[in-house]
Amino acid sequence: MKKDVLVSISGLQYEVDRDEPIEVISVGQYYNKNDKHYICYDEVIEGTDGVTSCTVKVGNEQIDIIKRGASNVHMIFEVGRKNTTFYNTPYGDLQIGIHTGRIQVAEEADKLTLEINYGLDINYSFIGDCQIQMKITSRK
Picture 1 (cartoon, rainbow, N blue to C red):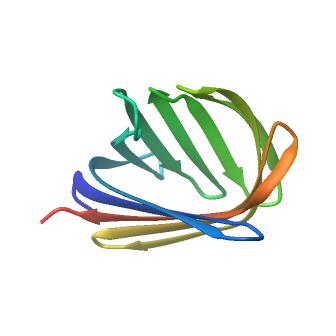
Picture 2 (picture 1 turned 180 degrees about the horizontal axis):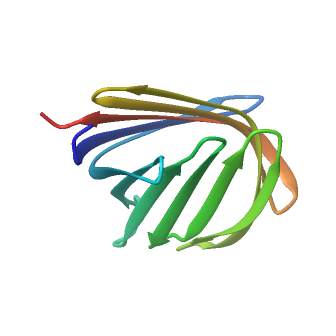
């Protein structure tokens, strides 16, 4: 895969009354180090002036999503484990719990596809089942 990439992220939070789709497309950088994939891109939070620098680290059994800037968080996704962290947002701090059910990684010559299914709780209250899909493709 080339260093300059297009990052497409879509997420879905399943709730009883409605599903909330979210989609972000950004340009980014890709590199591979010590058999791990790294994707770096910037994210703008709607309604704020700040930019958040995001790094996604994909290993064998774990995916880390690290955000620094207007929002700060280090989310760790490991199948069968619950990871707890603090999510610092412009609107306040939240304690989140991530219960990862499934991670799927597909690697092609100019494309990397990730899918994460997880349960999310905020401040010890279950919010819903969620899904993140990421498609990282080389820019032509």
